[in-house]
Amino acid sequence: MIQPELEILAIAIVVAVACALPGVFLVLRSMALMSDAISHSILLGIVLGFLFVGDIGSPLLILAAAATGVVTVVLVELLNQTRLVKEDAAIGLVFPVLFSIGVILIARFAGNVHLDTDAVLLGELVFAPFERFELAGADLGPRVLWVMLVILALNAAFLGIFFKELKLTTFDAGLAAALGFSPALVHYLFMSLVSITAVGAFDAVGSILVVAMMIGPPATAYLLTDRLSTMIALSAVVGVVGAAAGYLLSSTLDASIAGSMAVAIGLCFAGAFAFAPERGMVAVRRRRERQRWEFAETMLAIHLFNHESLPEHQEESRVQHLHEHLRWEESFAQRVVDRALDHGVVVRANHDRLELTSAGRHTARRAISSL
Figure 1 (cartoon, rainbow, N blue to C red):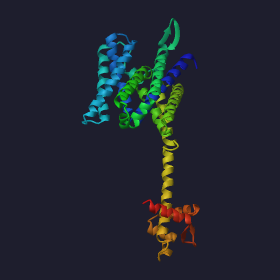
Figure 2: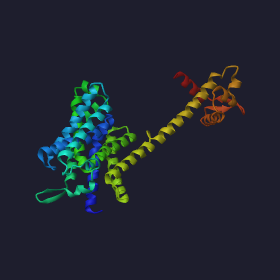
Figure 3: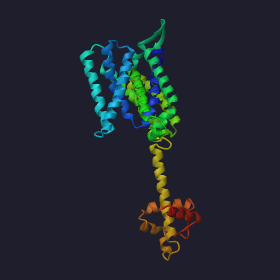
Figure 4: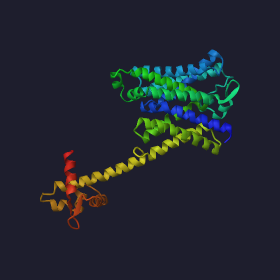
């Protein structure tokens, strides 16, 4: 790789990790859509900031955009608190309005400035290395890389300092309030952090990839672990893998870098969705299939136990009778009998009759007592 390619990849990796850290708590708080709302509505803050200072590189644009993100959160929550609209509907109402006002302002007052909507939505990582950060005449690399490194450090410091408060308010806001914490204060501090991260990230990668990097890696990690600290670490790892794989994919296909990274992150999620050890579709299907057969074995044990000392015992313990009494298909009944024989739940009394073993009686008694 040549230096510009390495710088593009470095920017993408830093953005992915910076977005994944707050993204974990967005996913756990069921606020994934809020990242989409913020990443779009901050356009209005950027445009207003530009119209105020007249300089596209001014830090005021970042502050104005971050403030717009917080305003978006406040407006959504005010609408939600009226109980006239639900939170998802409030998000769908607020951010299109703010984003559209930003688009109109660009068309009306900033048509000749590099604030076109395509760049806002899709970003363009290829151009990121051209804008350099210089200090005392020394070239220190792409400006956006330094911006995202500062935001990454800010995110890491915030999570390190307020980890306990974030964890408590995320999983039990009522308990947090009872213990003297302020869930509202923690919430707005956290959403301010999300806004700052979205502002810094979308300058390089566009709002679509901001959402993908903020939600995709944490959602993937959520399928792989139940521990919060492990989920944060896995989110960062998935973000790095998605960024690197996406860049390789874009080079191979000569396609959009941001689009390829979003696809790579989506593929990471699809892999976890299918093959996660506990929550993946394959594991869930295997667990349900195993539970189905275990339930059938238990039903067989209960059936034989209930008729064990009755006059009809000889007839009820016949394998062929299971089809009539338990309404099982013959093939299914035979498979249940074979599994019960293998597991020592029953033994054959003769060719067609079954008898419970002591383990089978224990299984039946335990199942009946639990009803």
